[in-house]
Image (cartoon, rainbow, N blue to C red; front, side, top):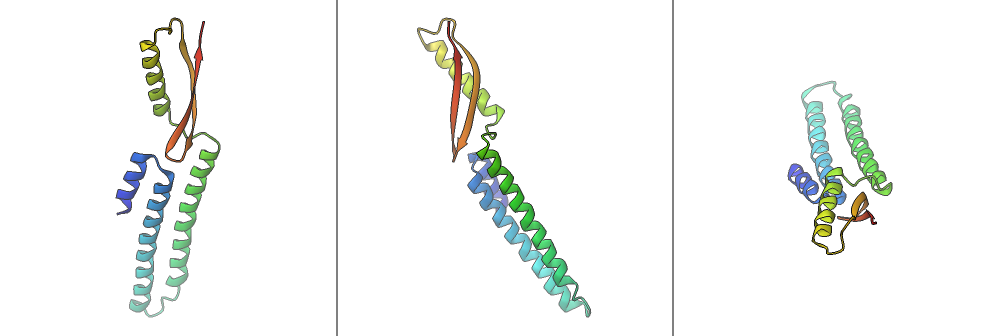
Length: 130
């Protein structure tokens, strides 16, 4: 289930869906760690050390997921998350529109910039005109 959620998040380029998928993944992994530590304490006589080890593993998984989400959120705030393939797609679309325009003589696309706003992208197209 978490893999399906992450696939949908990548298809839609949604950081909210990706965070949700990571949350599901961490939940399922913590359940497995809890099962192993509780089961191990019943199987082995002197396995009181399993409880803190399980807690440490769960803490590390939560910290790793939190750092990943924090990194992605900071990248979105810094406007660095627009991928090159999206910029290239916008460039091709702008060139296609300019080619259809009647007053496009000498107009060229200089730069493409943008930022992510939720699931949408706000793009700036810099044109050079004669």
